[in-house]
Amino acid sequence: MINMYEVSETNKMIESENLDVRTITLGISLLDCIDSDLKELNRKIYEKITVTARDLVRTGQDIEKEFGIPIVNKRISVTPIALVGAAACRRPEDFVEIAKTLDQAAETVGVNFIGGYSALVSKAMTKSDENLIRSIPQALAVTERICSSVNVGSTKTGINMDAVRLCGEIVKETAEATKERDSLGCAKLVVFCNAPDDNPFMAGAFLGVTEADAVINVGVSGPGVVKKALEKVRGKGFEELCETIKKTAFKVTRVGQLVAGEASERLGVPFGIVDLSLAPTPDVGDSVAEILEEIGLERVGAPGTTAALALLNDQVKKGGVMASSYVGGLSGAFIPVSEDQGMIDAVQAGSLSLEKLEAMTCVCSVGLDMIAIPGKTSASTIAGIIADEMAIGMINQKTTAVRLIPVIGKDVGDTAQFGGLLGYAPIIPVNEFGCETFINRKGRIPAPIHSFKN
View 1: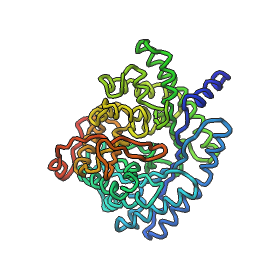
View 2: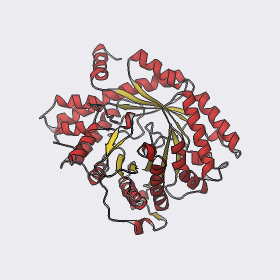
View 3: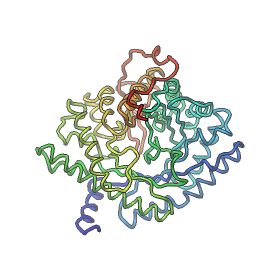
View 4: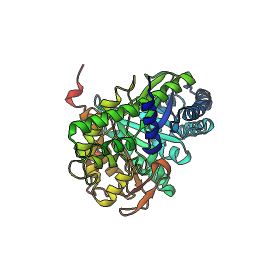
């Protein structure tokens, strides 16, 4: 039972500490839509999404009104389109037609993003996978709501370096295709190692093939709540610090569990997971960087940053996992630069570099996220950065991801504007020494020895 004190406490977190449910994401399987006729495939996809998700936005709004809990986004994830379109799509342009259908369906039901324009190629690529990946720049240029992802590595299979090299080229092409909007298309494209099947957060959400026909996944977020709680234990030891983070993460996750249960019951769709990630926004007071500074850093990027982030990530998971029957997705702390005002300030102050961000990804939930780099950065350098991040994920048996934005026409000292939750970002310098010979080797990096657990 929830007592009056807990109700009052939750209301305070919502009103003054930026607590919200970041997203309700409805996963929809499109496996039963597969058809060798492209026109028929698109008809089935549109019909499946618009019928299954017709009440999603209204249900989210009703829960918001009844419980007073802000639900920022209502989203959809679908089966990776490289699988769905394999029988009908003979060339990249065919996949672009599916992207347009997905975008239209998302607009019809009123969601802000639809994820799953994806390919899973951690070991090798089929022709369908390659065609989808090559279609990404055009697909993101002609749609508004599509989010795309490519899984190029895993602890079990190693890193598909052919796919890494191709993704470096695709990121660059996507930047060019959307250069009139500060290369915004790249903000909707993420490259993964060990991508989870049940992630509700964009741009990496897709519905794994082992999931139900439809499922509700919820992502909660409360950096501001954690920051306020830590203000009360300034100067205390690590034991009190950790206990405070765990207790706060528990409370935040309980809100997500409540919303997930209500949405599942009202939509008649099974509940999947609550992702208890601390996902920041550009709003003042809603920053993971500010939490790290409250822990004791003068500025994010200072010595001790990686240790502080490791502590935060672990305590969030320990506290949140007790508050929900099923925890999944990414779950922990996100460190997207453009979406976190504290991270932006740290870059502008000179305390946070790309290399330090890479070190931090060893212990955070995702990886190099929403980082604007000079538009002149070569495709091979982008691929090298992706390869580094995939290696961290593969060796550490964790999810890592790269969402780099080479902003065409801009360089270090400039700022890219993305708008809304995507925020803005100063251009970060990139190491200009080349890695082209390494990237152009064909094949894959083998899985590490600890992957052999059968």
